[in-house]
Image (cartoon, rainbow, N blue to C red):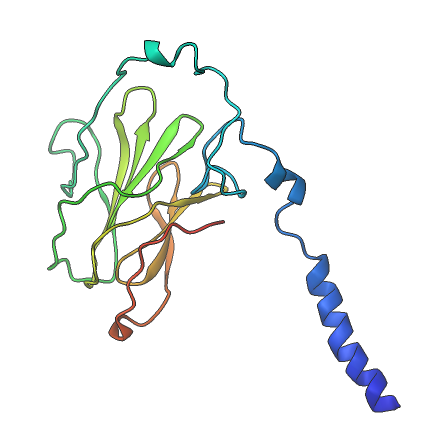
Length: 199
């Protein structure tokens, strides 16, 4: 009997504690997005729907192009181009693998008027009003398959993304400076990461 009681305590107590820990309020999941687009699908429901009403079926035909921008893959080491933006550099590579081109295949997030854009080994913060670059981060890779990066996650004041050579990287959302990075899987196992983290 004593063993049965101990077994019940060992099973039920941890399950009860885990069951009480709720990370996302289910009510928040049911409510449609009405502000920033701050996660991969806009919100945790995965619907990719927003309640914003500025654009609707009566005025959508009146929309015009506001701006375009060219994504700069170049690594800038100092204010050499006159715009005052230096590329933040991180990574575990030696800098001998140079990926200076790519395409945007991930969800672009928007938080407080800032767009967060990714390509493999690169993250940019851009002003949503005019497309101007705020900062650029470049990960010096060890290799991997550079087919895509599906986007970033925002957590408080951090931008989090995965690299093709299996690292999870956290950046300061205001400056692009690296907070930390952690290996997801050994590079030698040939797992390559492209997905957008969910926070």
